[in-house]
Image (cartoon, rainbow, N blue to C red):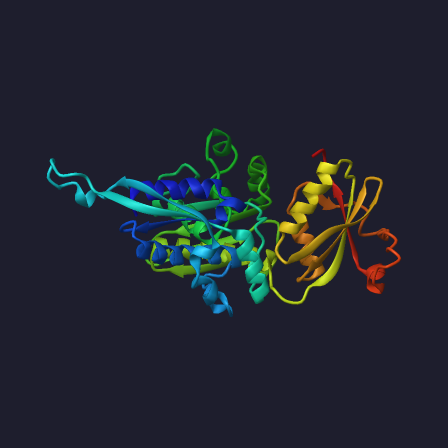
Length: 370
């Protein structure tokens, strides 16, 4: 991969968020319309991988139709120029240097998400929690904790592969603060209290560990902390470090998709009650947040009672999954007494349909000021 393109991918990996899910860098040989169209198809397929969480999005009915019109889904595109690869370094000194081109495309993730939902394909919510990974690269003589600043090809591969899958992966800084708190032995020994203490500074909701044993074959053990689920830990062998990294990212992505991807289909009416919203800006922000969640349609304010706001929506997944998605916003958390106390419901309007009075209500509390 060209140096400039590699560097840009690393930057995008480090800063990836919802807005970056629709951005793809695709090498092109020239600026012709034909080459641009070919590159846009490849770029769009990468975005569909990120949005569905599935490595082969074309397995879902109708997705091929999306790929047949890549320009329809593009917000904008541009080109990046960089010096040609080292292979051209022996060109005559008086010859003009060739430029390597990269097409940068920004796709409309909102429109694509809506189309995927209409097709009944799963959609991984663009609201995604960071996954902090403490990864030990265990070589024969020593073990090293990979860092966000590492030049090791395994660390760079981890970030690039995570970006390709839409996984918001965070590697620790491994600066003096980290080095004083955690070591490779803590990861190998499963000293979870030590790892949790060191993780606090990163404020990542999901924390994972992995040990990559180099050799032939490469062996990997990984697990998510704070869970005992059998499908949130595993081990496998791979023929190369690159294959091992790819499989590790696939495994972590699979867990996140199982939690947060919402299958398209028939939607059910849901009511979300938010307590503690004291300003117009706050409830408008909450409404925008709810509307952006995967599987959510037709969000509108149902009623207001002081600082309590009721939102009505249609959601195509189970209630437990909606709770997980809403809780991804750190300012929206289940109220401490919501599990034990009955949830008060607003009185339906006189002309409201009969089912409106019995729609299940999910209660959350707004944390802090907007």
